[in-house]
Length: 171
Image (tube, rainbow, N blue to C red; front, side, top):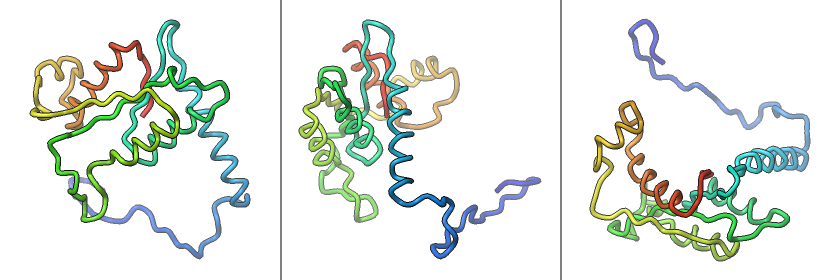
């Protein structure tokens, strides 16, 4: 917390597993409520202008895998209506682990979603360049300093998606 020119580090939350639950609903009722809200939010973001189709980023993590799986399980879903885009870094050692646990390469996770849902998959390989390539162009589009270094990688994926008629990307 920064207050009156001083910086103070403190925990902003504290979870007590023995505390009263925030909801009086059962676990099943809360799960159903979450699913209803999640379905509505995802459905609302699938809207695209006529003649275009939505797409989704798919990293293999829980968020993007859940979104894509939900869409694929929707009534009337057609795999050609939802292309998915995965950003890959082929120069990274596939055995590298973040904090000695999480693999940096999530290929096994996203490929299992693509195969299970029969999706149109597009791999965007980022090789031989860093986030500051074409910096002047990125600054022009952003009209601000770049707030996150992966912007350049996402921009490359957005260009591929746009060339395929995708105008709305879920992440």
